[in-house]
Length: 398
Image (cartoon, rainbow, N blue to C red; front, side, top):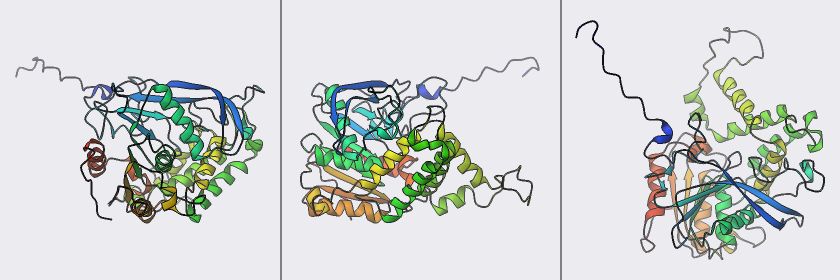
């Protein structure tokens, strides 16, 4: 080729939001329930809002909906992109989209930020109509059941006649479980991942330390703080500690080891972040305080602690008695927050209650967050369970 010859321009890469298996640019919407909403605590509010997103199309029989339930720090934005310049897709974008495990060519996917949240749904940071000020700790205590009942009102508003499936991981698994209990005629399938039917003392203890980090921050001010202020130090520390429980020792060692930051200055005797893992956790804490409300963190972690469907019924089998949905429960070997045996116990109780249930255990070193990360094995499990015919027996050894 001559020196002045021009090489053909390389084709520009396809923008991520235009990929064939992506739902593309999405927009959040708000559902406002105008009537009185009674909480399990006996308290009530006049109306509430849930912020939500949908992907795919509701079919003519209105029974192809899949409800996605998010975890503690999640929200309604579980797939797609909010703009062409958006640097981060929805938190489950790897799972939801055309041809993906939750196939939006077939299913109408709905995800809402929970009641008590802070990403557009009514919660402690919302204005109390009676005072015009943020509810703060005057907001009613929220339970997983309250979250489920609010989302059922949203689904009714959307015209959904029946859920093809409800699914989620961690707190989302609790929400899915209770949806199948509370609305058995409405729910055909449930997928529960990295979850539990009741937290261990250790898990409750971690949540309590996080709450204390927030409440002992002077800027918490008994829950009364400005929208752009509040216990940012306490919330960051709570997030840092919680994030450790979402990982695993092996995964952290592989990702960080004892590697030091290039700017650490050798053996400098300071309390600046010297190790990469320190820098990572500080980043997690700082990014969290920019998107999450401290009071919502208090309320939602308490809702998780209180979740125990067996308590009022005497046993988990009795709690599962109303369920008509077929169930898939997935545990992850490296999850030490809600370990495999807690997930297996859910599946065994479903079987003892005479329900159709399957259990799968995936070997990973990614910890509790395994359900959020790339996993072809998980995708195969989910798509097989969602796509199969009603009469096919979906069998896994327990």
